[in-house]
Image 1 (cartoon, chains in turn yellow, purple):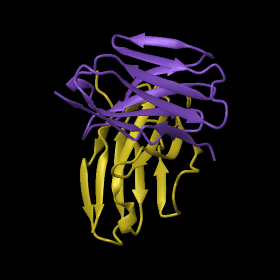
Image 2: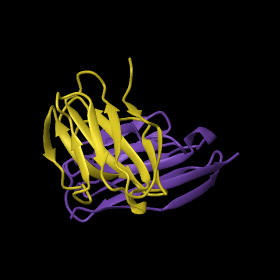
Image 3: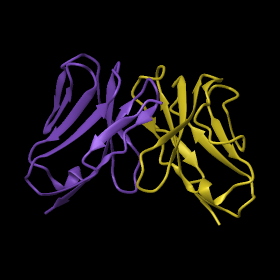
Length: 114
Length: 107
C-alpha cells in the first residue's frame, strides 16, 4: 500500500516568507510525528499528534512553528517568517499506535531559506 | 533532557568485515528502536527491543539490549555495500534519536 507522502519535496523560501509543509500519513495510522533533520545530524523531534490532538509540541523551536492535524489524518507544518537556521529536512512519520510504536517515515521536505 | 549517545560517529570497513555500533543512555530505557537511513533517504525501522538482555537477529544483523536497559548494540556480520548508511538508535518514549553511526563499506 501507499506509504507516508510529503509535499513539496523541495522548497526554497526567501528569508521572512511563510511556508506550509504537508504530510499524508498511512491510512489508519493514529499517531503522526514531525522531525527536523539538519545535514549530518539525527532527526530532532518537533511535535506529536494522536488523531487530531496535539499531545506534545515541546520540540517546536519557536512560536514561528505551528502544526495542525484537524481531521486526524493529513497534517500541515507551518513556519512563519522563515529564518536561515530553519533550513533543514522536515520529516513526517506515522505509526499505528502511540509513541513507542514502529514509525514509518515519509521522504521529507528539504527547506532552503535564502 | 533525555540524551542517547552513539559510538562511533563514523566507521569505514572493507566489504566482508564486521561492524558494530553502540548506543548508550544515562537513564533506563523502557525500550529501544533501531533505524537505518540510506544516503539521501529517510529513516527505515529495523527492530524494537523491549526486554532486559534481549537479543534479536535479522539475517546478518544482531541487536542486543543491555541487562540494565541503558545500552544497546547493533552488529553486522560480513558487511556488504548495501549496508551503507547511517544507523540510529531511537528512544520512542521521549522521541529521542541518537546522533547516528555512519557506515561506509569499501568494495
